Amino acid sequence: MDAPLYLPNQFPNVPLFARLLSLLEEDPGREHNDGIGSIHSRPALVDGQLGKTTTLPELLREALRLREVIVAALKPETVQALKEDRDVFIGVCLPTGHDWFVAALAVQALGCAVVALSPYSQPEEIVQLLEISTAVAVVFESASAEPATSVGDILNKQHSGAVVLGVREVISTPAPVPLTITLSPVPLKPSGAAWVVFTSGTTGPPKGVVHHRRAFAETSPRTIKQLNVQPGDRILDILPRYWITGISTAIMFLLAGAEIDMPRSGAWIEEYMWNRIRKGEIHWYVGFTQSFAKLCAYYRDNIAKLSPEVRREYADGLARLKGPITGGSMLPASVCRDWNALPGSRPLLSTYGTTEVGAVAVSLVDSVAVQPNNLGSFGKDVTVKLSEGDQGELLLKCPNMFREYLHRPEETAAAFDADGFFRTGDQVRREGNRYIFEGRLNFDVFKFQCYKIVAHEVESAIQELGDVQDVLVIPVRDDTTGKVLVGAIIRPTTAEIGKTGSEFPTSLRSLRAALYANGLAAYKLPSALTIIDPRDPPLPRSPVGKILKAKAREKYFPDGFLQGAAPAVTCADDDDGGLDHESRYYVSVNQGAIQVYLGGEQSRSYLGMWSTSSKSGEEKKCYRLWDWAGL
View 1 (cartoon, rainbow, N blue to C red):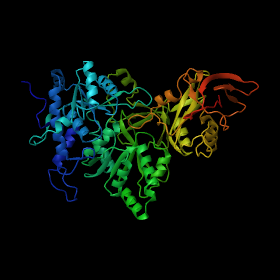
View 2 (tube, rainbow, N blue to C red; view 1 turned 60 degrees about the vertical axis):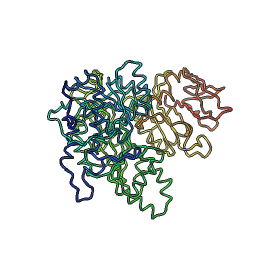
View 3 (cartoon, rainbow, N blue to C red; view 1 turned 90 degrees about the vertical axis):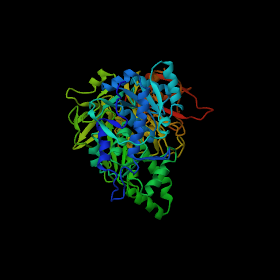
View 4 (cartoon, helix red, strand yellow; view 1 turned 135 degrees about the horizontal axis):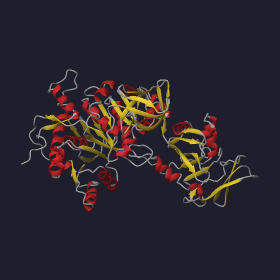
């Protein structure tokens, strides 16, 4: 009979488990004088959805139980690959919560790599990512519920051989007698695959980013020390576990001996968070940019109307929040100001990172000088250079560097320069000791005529006009002239768009005039504009809240639109004077068609015509206005 991979109470010798077991050894069950209790008895996880509290020893033993079920379901050749320390991939498709930790640690306890998947994706999408990663199994919350059943049906039809498993079916059974947990004496190779996280796909197809076994476990102690995270600190955690920051944050706070509080999901989350803050029960909160905007809006709409005595309780609780940390996208200046204006608030810590390297820079956004898109200070173990001296593509080298793009050797090689620096694809400029993010190359940074357009700069200028839920500035190609135009997609907060007295400029002419009056250079002004009715769905976003720019452009500025090849769209007429009639260009609306000319009426050059749908008899939901100034 073949020897087992590991003894029932034994974890593989890798940095993650070496550090987790060292926590138990450093604290052998003694109660602390500071009142936080022993790590053997105080909660490591609090799952609001399940109503379950778990200590670190309980978590590790549950992971060992699930590991036995997984290994029993694997094919003999897969088990042999594990014995030879070859890469084996297993999907983990679970929401943020207790079960994700059990499944992720169980997979890692086999020496396998966790393929991070979103449980909110369509079954076909999940199967596609399993195929890309050549996963031998996938773990869901329950194997007998959706999306596991649909994924299982598709896998069976494809004869893939991948096994579908459920966490609940395993850990709901009675636990065996606890065993003393040990570490294998034989270390696995540090370069082995441990995590596969797919890129967000905001500007192109997602890629599977492979991180090695040193990732997160070796860098977390430095971050813990830098942030001064203490044992027993409580983090309010709502980050998804298919996002690189969601994974690295979870591992870091687990290794710090903190309590990870994962509330039940729902639309009431802002109220729950503010109640916890009021009670002084939260030390850390890591969230998306949008979540901080929602917290500020909830305070303005609800807490600000309460009595001074009650507001003081919220302010005192907010002052006890050691670290409000944001990531996922650049922090708008308006959100910074709103947060810093809250009584008792501490400055936001805005992080910068990529799926390939994790979070590598932190910016302290204080109330004195809010500088949008400032990447902040890079870690001491991060080497930084720009491709063109003080500007250009940001290039990085650090210990947390990803190993490869899964099964994409050519793209992996192209991701590094000759000196081994990772090409982030982000355009950055250096101002003194600050690094200012300008956007994604070829998408957020592009040329109009010979001038450089930085999308974030134009977006920030539009946001300064107020009343904006979503804004996206992207390059729009005019196939007739061969030019690239500045396109803007805006979703205001008010439903009164286009009506007299609306606070936000809703014609291209008024938008350009407002931006120009606020100091935005003429060549940066949008030349194509879509305003979305705020009652309509928001701009398409990734599961972690990033706007899917390629999909947005495809939807609102599709290829061929300027040649008349695109489907009919709604369009505003010039009843409100919104269409310019200046000498350099001429736009006319005639019988449901827009005709665009370059030059004055007397000597005009016809540029194109395309159909629009009539607004008569129906409410307009999308306004599309075209402005050709500067062509």
